[in-house]
Image (cartoon, rainbow, N blue to C red; front, side):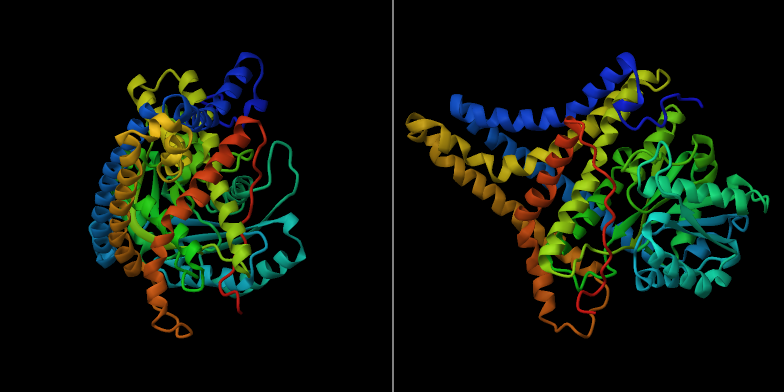
Length: 510
Protein backbone atom coordinates (compact mmCIF):
# COMPACT_ATOMS: atom_id res chain seq x y z
CA UNK A 1 0.00 0.00 0.00
CA UNK A 2 1.36 3.39 -1.00
CA UNK A 3 0.51 5.01 2.33
CA UNK A 4 1.18 2.71 5.32
CA UNK A 5 -1.10 4.57 7.76
CA UNK A 6 -4.13 4.56 5.45
CA UNK A 7 -6.54 2.72 7.76
CA UNK A 8 -5.55 4.13 11.15
CA UNK A 9 -8.69 4.54 13.26
CA UNK A 10 -7.34 6.10 16.46
CA UNK A 11 -4.18 6.45 18.53
CA UNK A 12 -4.73 2.88 19.75
CA UNK A 13 -3.70 1.57 16.33
CA UNK A 14 -0.21 3.07 16.70
CA UNK A 15 2.82 2.65 18.92
CA UNK A 16 5.65 4.77 20.27
CA UNK A 17 5.96 8.41 19.27
CA UNK A 18 3.33 8.02 16.57
CA UNK A 19 0.81 7.02 19.22
CA UNK A 20 1.65 10.08 21.32
CA UNK A 21 1.46 12.38 18.30
CA UNK A 22 -1.89 11.04 17.14
CA UNK A 23 -3.30 11.33 20.67
CA UNK A 24 -2.22 14.98 20.81
CA UNK A 25 -3.95 15.63 17.49
CA UNK A 26 -7.14 14.02 18.83
CA UNK A 27 -7.08 16.48 21.74
CA UNK A 28 -6.52 19.51 19.50
CA UNK A 29 -10.08 20.26 18.19
CA UNK A 30 -11.74 20.05 21.61
CA UNK A 31 -8.94 22.04 23.24
CA UNK A 32 -9.34 24.83 20.68
CA UNK A 33 -13.12 25.01 21.07
CA UNK A 34 -13.22 24.81 24.86
CA UNK A 35 -10.22 27.13 25.08
CA UNK A 36 -12.03 29.74 23.00
CA UNK A 37 -15.21 29.60 25.07
CA UNK A 38 -13.33 29.60 28.39
CA UNK A 39 -11.15 32.52 27.28
CA UNK A 40 -14.17 34.63 26.39
CA UNK A 41 -15.75 33.93 29.78
CA UNK A 42 -12.57 34.73 31.74
CA UNK A 43 -11.71 37.81 29.70
CA UNK A 44 -15.28 39.11 30.02
CA UNK A 45 -14.41 39.46 33.69
CA UNK A 46 -10.77 40.57 33.41
CA UNK A 47 -10.93 42.64 30.20
CA UNK A 48 -14.60 43.37 29.38
CA UNK A 49 -13.80 46.28 27.05
CA UNK A 50 -11.53 44.14 24.88
CA UNK A 51 -14.09 41.31 24.77
CA UNK A 52 -16.93 43.69 23.91
CA UNK A 53 -14.91 45.09 20.99
CA UNK A 54 -14.06 41.54 19.90
CA UNK A 55 -17.72 40.51 20.02
CA UNK A 56 -18.84 43.47 17.92
CA UNK A 57 -16.09 42.76 15.38
CA UNK A 58 -17.03 39.09 15.43
CA UNK A 59 -20.69 39.97 14.83
CA UNK A 60 -19.68 42.00 11.78
CA UNK A 61 -17.50 39.16 10.50
CA UNK A 62 -20.31 36.66 11.00
CA UNK A 63 -22.77 38.93 9.18
CA UNK A 64 -20.40 39.23 6.20
CA UNK A 65 -19.78 35.49 6.20
CA UNK A 66 -23.51 34.78 6.29
CA UNK A 67 -24.08 37.09 3.33
CA UNK A 68 -21.18 35.46 1.46
CA UNK A 69 -22.57 31.96 2.04
CA UNK A 70 -26.09 33.03 1.08
CA UNK A 71 -24.73 34.16 -2.30
CA UNK A 72 -23.30 30.66 -2.78
CA UNK A 73 -26.66 29.16 -1.85
CA UNK A 74 -28.50 31.24 -4.42
CA UNK A 75 -25.93 30.48 -7.11
CA UNK A 76 -26.22 26.77 -6.45
CA UNK A 77 -30.00 26.91 -6.40
CA UNK A 78 -29.93 28.24 -9.97
CA UNK A 79 -27.56 25.46 -11.03
CA UNK A 80 -29.67 22.88 -9.19
CA UNK A 81 -32.86 23.88 -11.03
CA UNK A 82 -31.03 23.93 -14.37
CA UNK A 83 -29.67 20.43 -13.84
CA UNK A 84 -33.08 19.08 -12.84
CA UNK A 85 -34.54 20.37 -16.11
CA UNK A 86 -31.81 18.84 -18.28
CA UNK A 87 -32.24 15.68 -20.32
CA UNK A 88 -29.11 13.86 -19.20
CA UNK A 89 -29.60 10.95 -21.57
CA UNK A 90 -29.53 13.43 -24.46
CA UNK A 91 -26.30 14.89 -23.09
CA UNK A 92 -24.78 11.40 -23.16
CA UNK A 93 -25.68 10.76 -26.79
CA UNK A 94 -22.30 11.88 -28.11
CA UNK A 95 -20.38 10.02 -25.40
CA UNK A 96 -19.71 6.29 -25.30
CA UNK A 97 -21.40 5.16 -22.10
CA UNK A 98 -22.88 1.69 -22.68
CA UNK A 99 -19.91 0.05 -20.91
CA UNK A 100 -20.64 1.73 -17.56
CA UNK A 101 -22.12 -0.33 -14.70
CA UNK A 102 -23.86 0.99 -11.59
CA UNK A 103 -23.10 -0.84 -8.35
CA UNK A 104 -25.50 0.28 -5.60
CA UNK A 105 -24.74 -0.66 -1.97
CA UNK A 106 -27.66 -0.36 0.46
CA UNK A 107 -26.66 -1.15 4.06
CA UNK A 108 -29.66 -2.10 6.17
CA UNK A 109 -30.16 -2.77 9.85
CA UNK A 110 -33.70 -3.05 11.23
CA UNK A 111 -35.56 -0.80 8.80
CA UNK A 112 -39.10 -1.71 7.82
CA UNK A 113 -40.06 -3.22 4.49
CA UNK A 114 -41.94 -0.01 3.66
CA UNK A 115 -38.72 2.03 3.85
CA UNK A 116 -36.86 -0.41 1.61
CA UNK A 117 -39.67 -0.56 -0.91
CA UNK A 118 -39.48 3.19 -1.33
CA UNK A 119 -35.76 2.90 -2.07
CA UNK A 120 -36.12 0.01 -4.51
CA UNK A 121 -39.13 1.50 -6.28
CA UNK A 122 -37.05 4.60 -6.96
CA UNK A 123 -34.25 2.42 -8.39
CA UNK A 124 -36.68 0.64 -10.72
CA UNK A 125 -38.04 4.00 -11.92
CA UNK A 126 -34.58 5.35 -12.70
CA UNK A 127 -33.74 5.92 -16.35
CA UNK A 128 -30.79 3.56 -16.45
CA UNK A 129 -30.49 0.19 -18.22
CA UNK A 130 -31.36 -2.20 -15.40
CA UNK A 131 -29.24 -4.97 -16.94
CA UNK A 132 -26.25 -2.72 -16.17
CA UNK A 133 -27.07 -2.47 -12.48
CA UNK A 134 -25.72 -4.50 -9.55
CA UNK A 135 -27.75 -3.95 -6.39
CA UNK A 136 -26.44 -5.19 -3.05
CA UNK A 137 -28.67 -5.25 0.01
CA UNK A 138 -26.13 -5.35 2.83
CA UNK A 139 -27.62 -6.70 6.05
CA UNK A 140 -26.17 -7.01 9.53
CA UNK A 141 -26.27 -10.43 11.22
CA UNK A 142 -26.83 -8.73 14.57
CA UNK A 143 -30.10 -7.22 13.26
CA UNK A 144 -31.93 -10.47 13.95
CA UNK A 145 -34.57 -12.60 12.25
CA UNK A 146 -36.86 -9.67 11.49
CA UNK A 147 -34.24 -8.12 9.23
CA UNK A 148 -33.75 -11.43 7.41
CA UNK A 149 -37.48 -11.67 6.75
CA UNK A 150 -37.53 -8.13 5.33
CA UNK A 151 -34.51 -8.87 3.13
CA UNK A 152 -36.11 -12.09 1.89
CA UNK A 153 -39.27 -10.25 0.87
CA UNK A 154 -37.34 -7.49 -0.87
CA UNK A 155 -35.21 -10.01 -2.75
CA UNK A 156 -38.27 -11.93 -3.93
CA UNK A 157 -39.93 -8.73 -5.12
CA UNK A 158 -37.01 -7.00 -6.87
CA UNK A 159 -34.21 -9.46 -7.71
CA UNK A 160 -35.39 -10.03 -11.30
CA UNK A 161 -35.57 -6.30 -12.04
CA UNK A 162 -31.80 -5.74 -12.08
CA UNK A 163 -28.86 -7.28 -13.89
CA UNK A 164 -27.56 -8.67 -10.59
CA UNK A 165 -29.03 -8.69 -7.10
CA UNK A 166 -27.13 -9.80 -4.02
CA UNK A 167 -28.00 -9.98 -0.32
CA UNK A 168 -25.03 -10.07 2.07
CA UNK A 169 -24.89 -10.54 5.83
CA UNK A 170 -22.08 -8.83 7.69
CA UNK A 171 -20.87 -11.05 10.57
CA UNK A 172 -20.89 -9.68 14.07
CA UNK A 173 -17.75 -8.90 16.13
CA UNK A 174 -15.03 -9.39 13.52
CA UNK A 175 -11.51 -8.48 14.67
CA UNK A 176 -10.44 -4.92 13.90
CA UNK A 177 -13.99 -3.70 13.22
CA UNK A 178 -16.60 -1.60 14.95
CA UNK A 179 -20.28 -2.18 14.14
CA UNK A 180 -21.44 0.35 11.59
CA UNK A 181 -21.90 1.33 8.00
CA UNK A 182 -18.19 1.33 7.12
CA UNK A 183 -17.53 -2.26 8.12
CA UNK A 184 -20.83 -3.39 6.57
CA UNK A 185 -20.35 -1.80 3.15
CA UNK A 186 -16.74 -2.95 3.05
CA UNK A 187 -17.90 -6.54 3.61
CA UNK A 188 -20.71 -6.16 1.06
CA UNK A 189 -18.58 -4.73 -1.73
CA UNK A 190 -15.97 -7.46 -1.29
CA UNK A 191 -18.71 -10.07 -1.65
CA UNK A 192 -20.00 -8.32 -4.77
CA UNK A 193 -16.47 -8.37 -6.17
CA UNK A 194 -16.03 -12.08 -5.49
CA UNK A 195 -19.47 -13.34 -6.47
CA UNK A 196 -20.41 -11.06 -9.35
CA UNK A 197 -17.77 -8.68 -10.67
CA UNK A 198 -14.83 -11.08 -10.89
CA UNK A 199 -16.96 -14.01 -12.06
CA UNK A 200 -18.55 -11.92 -14.81
CA UNK A 201 -15.17 -10.37 -15.70
CA UNK A 202 -16.53 -6.84 -15.43
CA UNK A 203 -13.72 -4.29 -15.72
CA UNK A 204 -13.15 -2.37 -12.48
CA UNK A 205 -12.73 0.82 -14.50
CA UNK A 206 -16.26 0.53 -15.84
CA UNK A 207 -18.04 0.40 -12.47
CA UNK A 208 -19.44 3.34 -10.54
CA UNK A 209 -20.22 2.54 -6.89
CA UNK A 210 -22.99 4.39 -5.07
CA UNK A 211 -22.82 3.99 -1.30
CA UNK A 212 -26.29 4.98 -0.17
CA UNK A 213 -28.10 5.15 3.13
CA UNK A 214 -30.90 2.60 2.91
CA UNK A 215 -33.60 5.30 2.78
CA UNK A 216 -32.00 7.03 -0.23
CA UNK A 217 -34.39 7.47 -3.13
CA UNK A 218 -32.71 8.46 -6.38
CA UNK A 219 -34.22 10.86 -8.87
CA UNK A 220 -35.06 9.31 -12.23
CA UNK A 221 -31.99 10.72 -13.99
CA UNK A 222 -29.48 10.40 -11.16
CA UNK A 223 -27.37 7.63 -12.70
CA UNK A 224 -27.40 9.35 -16.11
CA UNK A 225 -26.26 12.62 -14.49
CA UNK A 226 -23.64 10.76 -12.46
CA UNK A 227 -22.31 8.94 -15.52
CA UNK A 228 -22.06 12.18 -17.49
CA UNK A 229 -19.94 13.74 -14.73
CA UNK A 230 -17.84 10.58 -14.51
CA UNK A 231 -17.13 10.34 -18.24
CA UNK A 232 -16.37 14.05 -18.61
CA UNK A 233 -14.15 14.31 -15.52
CA UNK A 234 -10.47 15.01 -16.15
CA UNK A 235 -9.50 12.24 -13.72
CA UNK A 236 -12.64 10.10 -13.32
CA UNK A 237 -11.01 7.42 -11.13
CA UNK A 238 -9.50 10.00 -8.83
CA UNK A 239 -12.78 11.70 -8.11
CA UNK A 240 -15.81 11.11 -5.91
CA UNK A 241 -19.21 12.39 -6.96
CA UNK A 242 -21.44 14.18 -4.47
CA UNK A 243 -25.16 14.78 -5.10
CA UNK A 244 -27.31 17.14 -3.03
CA UNK A 245 -29.02 15.36 -0.10
CA UNK A 246 -32.57 16.54 0.44
CA UNK A 247 -34.79 15.09 3.16
CA UNK A 248 -38.13 14.93 1.42
CA UNK A 249 -39.22 11.33 1.98
CA UNK A 250 -41.14 12.24 5.13
CA UNK A 251 -40.64 16.00 5.38
CA UNK A 252 -44.35 16.83 5.62
CA UNK A 253 -44.79 14.51 8.59
CA UNK A 254 -41.71 15.75 10.49
CA UNK A 255 -41.99 18.43 13.20
CA UNK A 256 -40.66 21.91 12.49
CA UNK A 257 -37.48 21.42 14.51
CA UNK A 258 -36.48 18.34 12.52
CA UNK A 259 -37.32 20.05 9.23
CA UNK A 260 -35.13 23.04 10.01
CA UNK A 261 -32.15 20.88 10.96
CA UNK A 262 -32.57 18.67 7.90
CA UNK A 263 -33.03 21.53 5.43
CA UNK A 264 -30.12 23.42 6.97
CA UNK A 265 -27.98 20.37 6.17
CA UNK A 266 -29.17 20.50 2.57
CA UNK A 267 -28.35 24.19 2.33
CA UNK A 268 -24.89 23.62 3.78
CA UNK A 269 -24.18 20.98 1.14
CA UNK A 270 -25.39 23.34 -1.58
CA UNK A 271 -23.07 26.07 -0.36
CA UNK A 272 -20.15 23.66 -0.13
CA UNK A 273 -20.75 22.52 -3.70
CA UNK A 274 -20.05 26.07 -4.82
CA UNK A 275 -16.70 25.75 -3.04
CA UNK A 276 -15.52 22.33 -4.28
CA UNK A 277 -12.02 22.90 -2.91
CA UNK A 278 -13.61 22.51 0.55
CA UNK A 279 -15.87 19.61 -0.34
CA UNK A 280 -15.56 16.12 1.12
CA UNK A 281 -18.00 13.28 0.56
CA UNK A 282 -21.03 13.12 2.81
CA UNK A 283 -23.77 10.55 3.38
CA UNK A 284 -24.97 9.09 0.04
CA UNK A 285 -22.42 9.56 -2.75
CA UNK A 286 -20.69 7.74 -5.61
CA UNK A 287 -17.13 6.81 -6.61
CA UNK A 288 -14.99 4.61 -8.85
CA UNK A 289 -14.78 0.90 -8.05
CA UNK A 290 -11.21 0.93 -9.33
CA UNK A 291 -10.33 3.46 -6.65
CA UNK A 292 -11.98 1.38 -3.93
CA UNK A 293 -10.00 -1.72 -4.91
CA UNK A 294 -6.73 0.23 -4.94
CA UNK A 295 -7.19 1.69 -1.45
CA UNK A 296 -8.58 -1.48 0.11
CA UNK A 297 -12.23 -0.39 0.40
CA UNK A 298 -13.76 1.38 3.40
CA UNK A 299 -12.20 1.52 6.82
CA UNK A 300 -13.84 -0.87 9.26
CA UNK A 301 -12.75 0.80 12.50
CA UNK A 302 -14.30 4.29 12.26
CA UNK A 303 -17.76 5.86 12.40
CA UNK A 304 -17.57 8.60 9.75
CA UNK A 305 -17.01 6.29 6.77
CA UNK A 306 -18.74 8.66 4.34
CA UNK A 307 -16.10 11.39 4.65
CA UNK A 308 -13.19 9.13 5.66
CA UNK A 309 -13.31 7.28 2.32
CA UNK A 310 -12.49 10.59 0.63
CA UNK A 311 -9.53 11.28 2.91
CA UNK A 312 -8.34 7.66 2.49
CA UNK A 313 -8.20 8.22 -1.27
CA UNK A 314 -6.70 11.70 -0.86
CA UNK A 315 -3.75 10.37 1.15
CA UNK A 316 -3.35 7.22 -0.96
CA UNK A 317 -3.04 9.29 -4.15
CA UNK A 318 -0.75 11.86 -2.50
CA UNK A 319 -3.31 14.65 -2.66
CA UNK A 320 -4.37 13.93 -6.25
CA UNK A 321 -8.02 13.30 -5.44
CA UNK A 322 -11.11 15.50 -5.47
CA UNK A 323 -14.87 15.63 -5.03
CA UNK A 324 -16.88 16.61 -8.10
CA UNK A 325 -20.15 18.28 -7.02
CA UNK A 326 -23.33 17.12 -8.72
CA UNK A 327 -26.11 19.69 -8.49
CA UNK A 328 -28.69 16.93 -8.57
CA UNK A 329 -30.74 15.51 -5.69
CA UNK A 330 -31.08 12.28 -3.84
CA UNK A 331 -33.90 12.15 -1.31
CA UNK A 332 -33.66 10.74 2.21
CA UNK A 333 -35.63 10.78 5.46
CA UNK A 334 -35.76 13.69 7.85
CA UNK A 335 -35.35 12.56 11.43
CA UNK A 336 -38.68 11.52 12.84
CA UNK A 337 -39.60 9.60 15.97
CA UNK A 338 -42.94 8.29 17.17
CA UNK A 339 -43.22 11.26 19.56
CA UNK A 340 -41.82 14.81 19.57
CA UNK A 341 -39.47 14.02 22.44
CA UNK A 342 -38.17 10.95 20.63
CA UNK A 343 -37.61 13.08 17.53
CA UNK A 344 -35.63 15.63 19.55
CA UNK A 345 -33.42 12.88 20.98
CA UNK A 346 -32.88 11.33 17.56
CA UNK A 347 -32.00 14.67 15.95
CA UNK A 348 -29.40 15.29 18.64
CA UNK A 349 -27.87 11.82 18.30
CA UNK A 350 -27.73 12.07 14.53
CA UNK A 351 -26.10 15.51 14.65
CA UNK A 352 -23.58 14.23 17.17
CA UNK A 353 -22.76 11.29 14.90
CA UNK A 354 -22.29 13.62 11.94
CA UNK A 355 -20.11 16.02 13.95
CA UNK A 356 -18.07 12.98 15.02
CA UNK A 357 -16.53 13.58 11.62
CA UNK A 358 -14.06 15.53 13.75
CA UNK A 359 -12.23 12.19 14.03
CA UNK A 360 -10.97 13.00 10.53
CA UNK A 361 -9.00 16.00 11.84
CA UNK A 362 -6.28 14.00 13.67
CA UNK A 363 -6.29 11.45 10.84
CA UNK A 364 -5.70 14.14 8.24
CA UNK A 365 -3.12 16.12 10.22
CA UNK A 366 -1.22 12.93 11.05
CA UNK A 367 -1.37 11.93 7.39
CA UNK A 368 -0.03 15.31 6.32
CA UNK A 369 2.92 14.97 8.71
CA UNK A 370 3.72 11.49 7.40
CA UNK A 371 3.06 11.93 3.68
CA UNK A 372 5.83 14.01 2.16
CA UNK A 373 4.49 13.86 -1.40
CA UNK A 374 1.64 16.32 -0.86
CA UNK A 375 2.54 19.97 -1.40
CA UNK A 376 2.97 22.06 1.72
CA UNK A 377 0.55 24.71 0.43
CA UNK A 378 -2.20 22.13 -0.06
CA UNK A 379 -1.56 20.70 3.40
CA UNK A 380 -1.83 24.08 5.11
CA UNK A 381 -4.96 25.05 3.20
CA UNK A 382 -6.85 21.83 3.89
CA UNK A 383 -5.66 21.62 7.50
CA UNK A 384 -6.96 25.13 8.13
CA UNK A 385 -10.29 24.40 6.42
CA UNK A 386 -10.88 21.28 8.50
CA UNK A 387 -9.77 22.67 11.87
CA UNK A 388 -11.52 26.01 11.39
CA UNK A 389 -14.69 24.28 10.19
CA UNK A 390 -15.10 22.16 13.31
CA UNK A 391 -14.03 25.04 15.56
CA UNK A 392 -16.62 27.35 13.97
CA UNK A 393 -19.34 24.72 14.24
CA UNK A 394 -18.80 24.32 17.98
CA UNK A 395 -18.12 27.93 18.98
CA UNK A 396 -19.62 30.50 16.61
CA UNK A 397 -23.33 30.07 17.48
CA UNK A 398 -22.54 30.24 21.19
CA UNK A 399 -20.33 33.30 20.74
CA UNK A 400 -23.02 35.05 18.73
CA UNK A 401 -26.18 34.27 20.66
CA UNK A 402 -25.03 33.74 24.26
CA UNK A 403 -21.56 34.95 25.13
CA UNK A 404 -22.19 38.39 23.65
CA UNK A 405 -23.91 39.32 26.91
CA UNK A 406 -21.14 38.17 29.24
CA UNK A 407 -19.22 41.47 29.50
CA UNK A 408 -22.41 43.04 30.86
CA UNK A 409 -22.80 40.29 33.45
CA UNK A 410 -19.15 39.91 34.47
CA UNK A 411 -17.55 43.24 33.58
CA UNK A 412 -18.46 44.96 36.82
CA UNK A 413 -19.92 48.36 37.64
CA UNK A 414 -17.11 50.31 35.96
CA UNK A 415 -17.66 48.66 32.59
CA UNK A 416 -21.44 48.88 32.82
CA UNK A 417 -21.27 52.68 33.05
CA UNK A 418 -19.48 52.99 29.69
CA UNK A 419 -21.03 53.86 26.34
CA UNK A 420 -19.70 50.57 24.99
CA UNK A 421 -21.71 48.55 27.51
CA UNK A 422 -24.83 50.48 26.49
CA UNK A 423 -24.33 49.81 22.78
CA UNK A 424 -23.11 46.20 22.95
CA UNK A 425 -26.53 44.50 23.29
CA UNK A 426 -28.06 46.88 20.75
CA UNK A 427 -25.40 46.19 18.14
CA UNK A 428 -25.67 42.45 18.73
CA UNK A 429 -29.46 42.55 18.51
CA UNK A 430 -29.36 44.59 15.29
CA UNK A 431 -26.95 42.12 13.71
CA UNK A 432 -29.21 39.23 14.63
CA UNK A 433 -32.26 40.96 13.16
CA UNK A 434 -30.40 41.51 9.86
CA UNK A 435 -29.33 37.86 9.79
CA UNK A 436 -32.88 36.68 10.54
CA UNK A 437 -34.22 38.83 7.69
CA UNK A 438 -31.75 37.05 5.44
CA UNK A 439 -33.53 33.79 6.24
CA UNK A 440 -36.37 34.87 3.95
CA UNK A 441 -34.35 33.62 0.97
CA UNK A 442 -33.75 30.30 2.73
CA UNK A 443 -37.47 29.97 3.45
CA UNK A 444 -38.32 30.57 -0.23
CA UNK A 445 -35.81 27.97 -1.47
CA UNK A 446 -36.93 25.45 1.14
CA UNK A 447 -40.54 25.81 0.00
CA UNK A 448 -39.54 25.16 -3.61
CA UNK A 449 -37.67 22.02 -2.59
CA UNK A 450 -40.75 20.46 -1.02
CA UNK A 451 -42.56 17.53 -2.64
CA UNK A 452 -46.34 17.79 -3.21
CA UNK A 453 -48.35 18.30 -0.02
CA UNK A 454 -50.10 15.12 1.19
CA UNK A 455 -53.87 15.43 1.25
CA UNK A 456 -53.95 14.76 5.01
CA UNK A 457 -52.48 18.23 5.59
CA UNK A 458 -54.41 21.42 5.01
CA UNK A 459 -53.07 24.55 3.36
CA UNK A 460 -52.26 25.97 6.80
CA UNK A 461 -49.30 23.59 6.87
CA UNK A 462 -47.54 25.98 4.48
CA UNK A 463 -47.57 28.62 7.21
CA UNK A 464 -45.65 26.44 9.66
CA UNK A 465 -43.28 25.43 6.86
CA UNK A 466 -42.42 29.13 6.49
CA UNK A 467 -42.36 30.20 10.14
CA UNK A 468 -40.16 27.23 11.07
CA UNK A 469 -37.06 29.29 10.21
CA UNK A 470 -37.58 31.35 13.36
CA UNK A 471 -36.17 28.29 15.15
CA UNK A 472 -32.71 28.81 13.63
CA UNK A 473 -31.14 30.47 16.72
CA UNK A 474 -32.29 27.48 18.76
CA UNK A 475 -31.32 24.73 16.29
CA UNK A 476 -27.81 25.95 15.47
CA UNK A 477 -26.95 26.01 19.18
CA UNK A 478 -28.69 22.90 20.48
CA UNK A 479 -28.36 20.79 17.33
CA UNK A 480 -25.15 22.27 15.98
CA UNK A 481 -22.76 23.72 18.52
CA UNK A 482 -23.63 21.49 21.49
CA UNK A 483 -23.45 18.12 19.69
CA UNK A 484 -20.28 19.44 18.03
CA UNK A 485 -18.76 20.17 21.45
CA UNK A 486 -20.02 16.80 22.67
CA UNK A 487 -18.21 14.99 19.87
CA UNK A 488 -15.00 16.98 20.27
CA UNK A 489 -15.00 16.43 24.03
CA UNK A 490 -15.42 12.68 23.55
CA UNK A 491 -12.50 12.66 21.13
CA UNK A 492 -10.42 14.79 23.49
CA UNK A 493 -10.93 12.35 26.37
CA UNK A 494 -10.65 9.20 24.21
CA UNK A 495 -14.28 8.20 24.63
CA UNK A 496 -15.11 6.91 21.12
CA UNK A 497 -18.59 7.39 19.73
CA UNK A 498 -20.05 4.18 18.36
CA UNK A 499 -22.12 4.10 15.18
CA UNK A 500 -25.72 5.00 15.99
CA UNK A 501 -28.28 3.82 13.41
CA UNK A 502 -30.97 6.43 12.91
CA UNK A 503 -34.46 4.86 13.18
CA UNK A 504 -36.52 5.36 10.02
CA UNK A 505 -40.11 6.53 10.53
CA UNK A 506 -42.15 7.81 7.59
CA UNK A 507 -45.49 8.52 9.29
CA UNK A 508 -45.67 8.32 13.11
CA UNK A 509 -49.46 7.95 12.96
CA UNK A 510 -49.35 4.96 10.58
